Image (cartoon, rainbow, N blue to C red; front, side):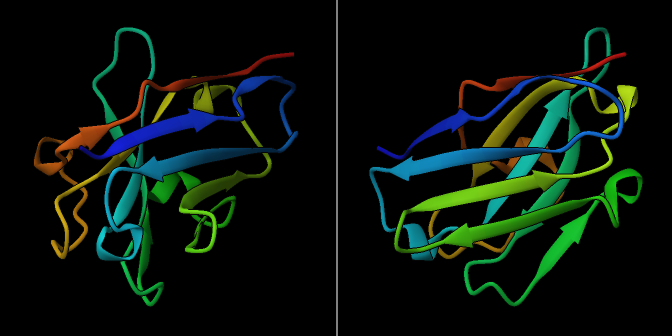
Length: 125
C-alpha cells in the first residue's frame, strides 16, 4: 500500500521561502507521477504542481508559476515543493498525492488515489 508523508511546513513571513518534502513508500516510486495540492480554510482543494514519472514534464497552477518548483529524487523516494516569494494567499494545508503506477499526472484531485496527511503552511506578517 502506497503511503505518503509530508513535512516541511511552518509559519513564515511574506517573501520568505519554504521547501516541502513528501516521502513515498509502499510501491515503486519511479512508476508514479506525483502532485501537490493545497486547501485553505473555507476553500476547495486546489491543484498546485505536478511532475511526471520521468522528470520530463512539470506543470503549475498559474498563481505559483515562477515562484514554486516541484522536483523528485528517485534515490530518496521523495518529491519536493520549493516555494519562494511566499504570499499570504499561499497559506493552506499542502498535500502530496499520487495516482496508480504508470498513470499520467493530472490536475484533477479526484483522480488521485493516495494522499498524505498534509502539512500546514502559514504566511503572515
